[in-house]
Image 1 (cartoon, rainbow, N blue to C red):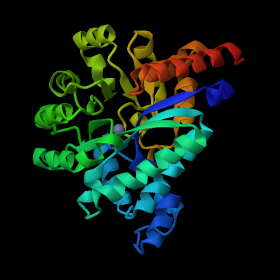
Image 2 (cartoon, rainbow, N blue to C red; image 1 turned 120 degrees about the horizontal axis):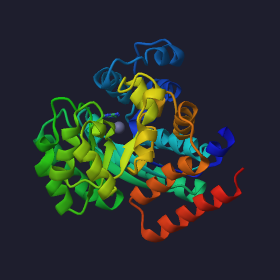
Image 3 (tube, rainbow, N blue to C red; image 1 turned 30 degrees about the vertical axis):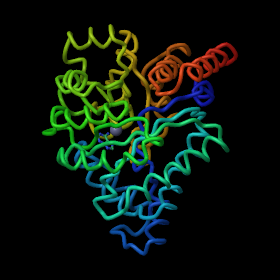
Length: 335
Ligand code: ADE
Ligand code: ZN
């Protein structure tokens, strides 16, 4: 099963680029930018990655992002992630970035996006990985700040396919961002939102109704509402589930308790993603392996996660067909 999962073509739809900053690169960037860190080595930093919940993770994650300062830093960050994708047979990725985490520290928007975009272009030409970029609003900040961020993004519209919503779910419900999401849609952006990770099933319902989303990020608390479950099956609204993240942030106690396979078997359009792999102990292959170690599944069921991700992606129909054929061909030939 390990070889099957390693070789399976994969599509990632839920990856925060700042969450792919490995301790080794973080130390290198801190040195390059003459910043001092409260840890003596990457190993010591990695040991601090023990979290009680989403907020305890976010505090460390935003601290880590301070090491990113120049366009080259954002390039190096993104390139390291793409090289990791290549090893995991990731053929397409849709990458989140959090501009406010950087612009609030005085890093210009163009520095952030140009560094990330240059690496994504190179990832396509040199590694054959297609990609899209999604800009997230930080939900713990104000609506006005989100609107200002949307305005800052307009000159870079050609590089950004959609907008998302991340950070602290508790206390920052979807309706806080209904107006800015409407404005983003009027500008032609697609929309997605984190919902039902730590927050209740109602946040999923409200994100669908108030934010016009094309996908739900996480969404695992949908099981708390039978009506919502029926709707998700009927509409085939995709869920970008992040198994290792959910264990690290204690959404589930252990992988055996995770509901992703139950959701798949009930017919929901669930996908597997890595979220913040540098912090949660694994990239795409690691996430697939962790799920399949805890839940017995057939090759067809495992491949269904990729097929669902292809259908849920923001690529054109021709490329979707090409990628689905690649997966079917792999299923035919893999032993
Ligand atoms: N930002 C980065 N990772 C996140 C997550 N899992 N939930 C909400 N915001 C995030
Ligand atoms: Zn996330």
